[in-house]
Length: 219
Image (cartoon, rainbow, N blue to C red):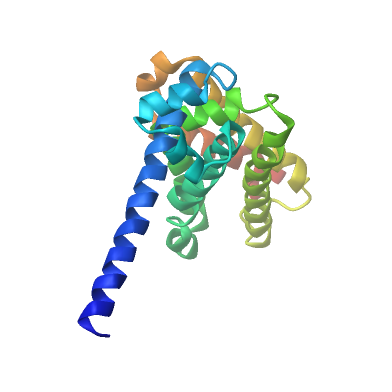
């Protein structure tokens, strides 16, 4: 590659990076505003002022406010997968029990570290607009299917007892997990500092194991 070609490539890469940074800046500003004010009380003009950009720049990245909000829902799923799923694979190969516990801890950590996205997903998004429902359901289905798969693996590995209604149990576990996140990171944000992630994850894991482990058949 010639020196001129390299320079052109670097210039193009720089423009792409700048565009991505600007898009992330808009998403970050919108995330804070949607979380604080709600969807309908947050206007594009407010986002423009917060992000210090013009209308033309905004419409380079998003069609409208609805498209921006959907982008945040997608961002929530992508970041959760990256923070929780992709970092747990190696543990799974070594010890299924440790994997389950680590998965729970990392999920709690993600929700606490992303309170605005948590608030948008759990409180603001549901029921706001029909257009948002498929993206909210996508996240729930992703988590649910993941829990179902791991329960099935646990049964096959003789960690969990046979004969359990896996789909029903998965829904119970996911519902309990999301309720804890909603209570401590949305409803009772002031209590989040007293929310001991390690202790709560251990308690949640012990609760799961007490009802699902093979030994429970003998109780």
